[in-house]
Length: 302
Image (cartoon, rainbow, N blue to C red; front, top):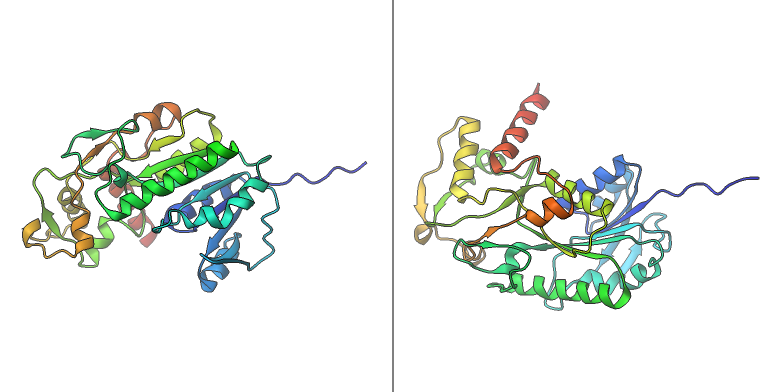
């Protein structure tokens, strides 16, 4: 008597960017099969070399590049594509595929932004704080969150929404900005931001996949909302270079997009992430995160 081969659990990444790729790599190391979408033929070939099954996707059609078959069992799905004025394009494109997986799909994670909270003049916010976005980007995020939440309720699918802060990690940190000569010390008194190392984000997502909880909304962030100039100065200290001159936000000549990042001022709590997901940060502040990146860069350069 022969038995059917055991099928690997499968993660479907709608959008295969920086955060999703780190998360996917963590699951791949645990024996998961990874399917991911991309808009680039070149990136599709790179994904194949990484052992990932690519799907070329645009907002109006889906084309399979490899032997990917979305009728295969999907265990988990992560959505990291930005919303547009209609909300989340991934929902319209892949809702049918997810519904076909209702028997095996145990987790759907939508990556949103803590920008949905808007400005709180430096006060603390948590998951019970009403969304009050101050930008069009934030308004689109709220719409996308509502769409996914409604889809989950109507179809009894396990939708989880994760509100992310500024993301940094190897190759995308203040160390790189300083080295490239793009670092600026823009001072807006009282302004703070939360951040999160990409490995901690991946770790929290992995914990969510493996823990059952009734919570459907999580803030993912570090423990140390801090002024942006503090991060720049710390990176300069590690690199043993002088920090750029401090300038006021009024004199910074920022683009409208750049200015919009300074419109919101808040401190984001992550208690639910720690308790409901039983997750502890490896990098509770930018200091531990930059220290680790810097040490690994030195190690890899030897």
